[in-house]
Amino acid sequence: MGLLYLCFNNQANLANRLGDVPASIKNLEAALESTKDPRLVGRDELPLAESYLNLANAHCYMTNHTRAMAFAEEAFNFAAKTAERIQEIVYQMKSQDPARFSGSDDEKSL
Image (tube, rainbow, N blue to C red):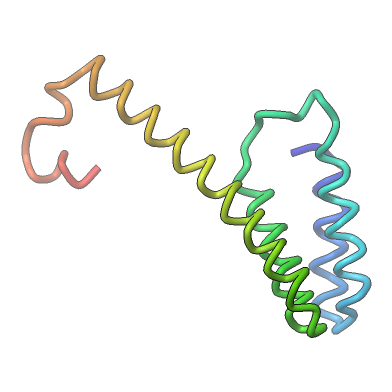
């Protein structure tokens, strides 16, 4: 994530700790907006999933349940993308070095 994302996300966390949920929402939305820079597309989506989930929680707290569900769905989508990427990496690793993944129980727990 870019520097703007980190700054806005940290401000959102601070606002949330101070009990200012509307300010937290504003900063989380700004953090997500900063990720629309084309240079950042395709990077790690897990922080985005976390930010969308934080927005879902904040909107739920503010009783904006429809918006909360929309943000929760976005969080799920970004988390699913990350899980798919991890599965692809593991599959590639297994195909390149099958012996590494067919050994003892310790290795199977990877």
